[in-house]
View 1: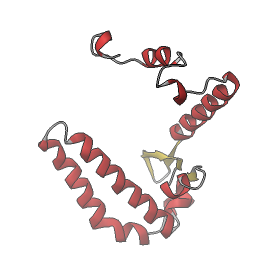
View 2 (view 1 turned 90 degrees about the vertical axis):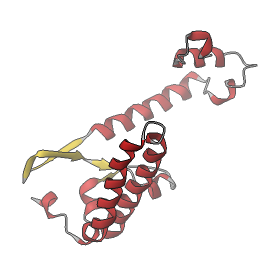
View 3 (view 1 turned 45 degrees about the vertical axis):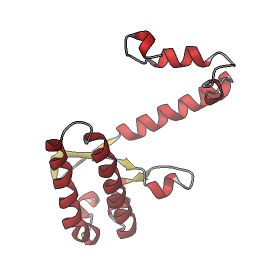
View 4 (view 1 turned 45 degrees about the horizontal axis):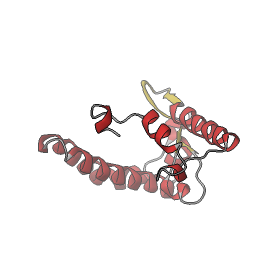
Length: 146
């Protein structure tokens, strides 16, 4: 499909091809409009949750996500937790840090496609997280309780 369209694969190309019940992609789509509409609204809700930010009173120029999704929660039905609650709980904070390291590993694989120089940034991030992991999981999150 991409080659037929100048090397560019567009969402519309995939959907149009998948409309054919004989296309191998057909089974990967929800063709019941009621169910598809509900799934789309769920996707929109996720996007809204991910865009929610809070500004920290003690550092007004610092904004963070209001909610985070932990991998352990994703495996048991999903949902988002209040970031302040996660940062106030050592176990959840440790899970968040672990999730960050997993994300960095994924980024490393993608960045490796580009150049070695960029990998140095990931190396530094991994070093900072590893070095500070213990400190971060034992510090309190009082900045959220002001």
